[in-house]
Length: 127
Length: 207
Image 1 (cartoon, each protein chain N blue to C red):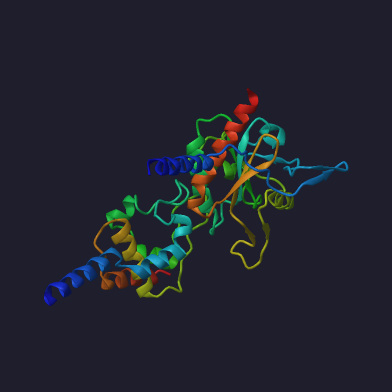
Image 2 (image 1 turned 135 degrees about the horizontal axis):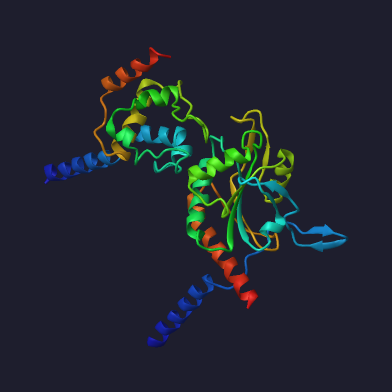
């Protein structure tokens, strides 16, 4: 009986953890990204791109950690505010935002910290 | 016992009816003195240029109910969220010819009519339905105040000015009748109801 109860407890714990794996990532997303990309990641039409529907992000050919740290500007004519970077965020914080986006918004596998570090090194060389 | 239940039922019907009551929306704001007479608050005369390069004054808006906000396109803080709510309102009343949306820019230097036109196009909205107006900055600050929006130069703010994100509903007589906090999506359903209520009021009066 005792075993059953503790296993239920464990299951509950695992489930509740799964539901909210990237708590810090979500908090940071809401603080730094949501005013333009919206709390639910839907963006603002063709002014601020959506994250949840982004084919570029889904393709995996976009260095998201670098965009968060150094900003991102793609348009020839800037319509809204340009995406500024957040150089003060640590590697771990950027990793948590990135994985919140990949896991919760894009429903993809989270990225390993090693891969994120590698991505960040790739752009720091050019800056 | 049966009597008791039917009494309760009656009360609950009465209460539920009350929530959809017919009291008109209030006229918001302090009364003004005009020629020594006290009158309800109203939006003063203004003249702006829209994204099509046309002059827009209150006269052009006299036949419409309009939803107003104050923003600027390069605003990195609250504006995108407010705009998202404005888009929800736009989508809801897109086919209603009585309703217009009006966005006043607080940054006329960068938000030229051409730039605002591109912005409207990127939002994918109709240029005659949703007006993006630019004009003199100080006059816009004053006009914002008449719409109960605070806007001021603020060196601590990312772009040098600051403002609150209210969305206002203005009727055909230039009275502000309702507002929503544009930064709070939960405020919008009630605001949509307010717009419907005002449209109904106007419809009833026309009969």
